Image 1 (tube, rainbow, N blue to C red):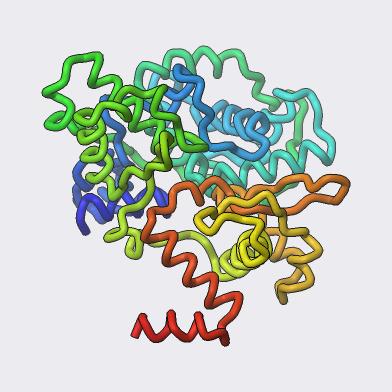
Image 2 (image 1 turned 90 degrees about the vertical axis):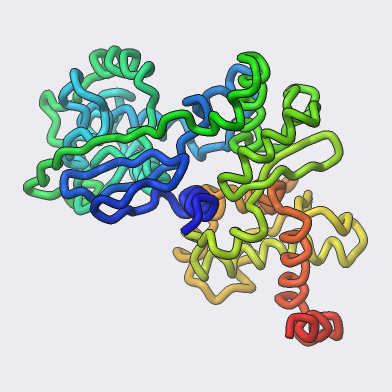
Length: 393
C-alpha cells in the first residue's frame, strides 16, 4: 500500500490496523499494543492540530450535539485516565456505568433525556475512534493518543476538577456492563520525526506557518475557505507546496472561484474505501434525486451545483424506500455525522434533508461520475442512461 493510499484510507475509514512489527506508513504515527500489533494515524505537519482553525475563526466540521459529546468524552477520560502521571492513552478500561455516572455528576441530572444524549454521544465517539465501546466497557480510542504533549498539563488540571460520580451512584443500565474489564496491555506511541520537513524546510517560520494553516483550513474546515484569509492560497509558490503536502496524503486542492477546499485524488479515491453502508447509500441517492436531480430537471438548480435549497421531506424518504423506519433513521443519522446530508427546516413544514458540506469536496472528475450515477439511478431506462452505459463498456 502506498503512503498516499494509507493516508486516504485512514481518513475515510479510521485508524489503520498494523501487524506485529509492521511499521507505520510515511507521515503516520504508530500506536503500538503490548503484543506488537498497532494502529496507524496520520500525523499533521509541524505537530499542528485542527484546533489551529480557532485562531483564524474558521468553523470546523460540525459535530451533532457537540457540547454533550465533549462532556461525555471528558467523563470517559476521567474514568479511564487513572494515572495522571502517565500519558492519557491507552489508559485503563472503565465500565460504561462509571462513565455515565461521571457524566451525570458533571451535568447534574440523570433523566431519560440525559440517557439519550449519553448513548448518542458514546456512539459518535466510538464511530470517530475517540472512544472504544464494547461489551459494556469503555476504552480511550486511538485519537486520544494524538493529543499534543503540551496539552496534557491542561487536561490533567481538568481531570482533577471533574467529579467522578461514584459517590452513592449505582450508574445507569444504558449498555450491557462487563463484569470483569480486561487489563490494558503495555502500549507506546511512535510519532514520526520531521513530517514534510523536506517541503517546509526551505521556508522561513512565517511562511511555513502560513502553509500549515492553509493545510488545516482546506482539510478540516466545514466549508471552503476564502483565499483572502490564507496567504498560502494566494501565493503560487506557497500554494504549490501546499498541493504537494496534500498529494502525499492522497488529497488535491479544489478551487471554486476564490474559495478553496480539498478532496480525494482520483487515483486513490476508488481504493480508499468507505464506511457508508448499502442502506445509507440508498438513502443518500434518494436525497440527491429529490433535492438535486428533480430541481435541476425543472431548471431551478444550476447544472454544476450539488448543494440544494430544496430539502427532501422525511415523508418522501419513507414513501420511496423499503427500509424499516428504524433503519432509515439510523441511515440518516450516519449520513448526518459523515457530512453527506444536512437536516434543515422547510418553512412551516417538518423539515427535510439536503446534500451536506462533503459535496464541496468533489473534484471535477468525481462530479461528472456522480452526475452519471444519478442519471442511472433516476432514469435507468432513458436514452441518456443507455449512452452512459455504452461509454463505460
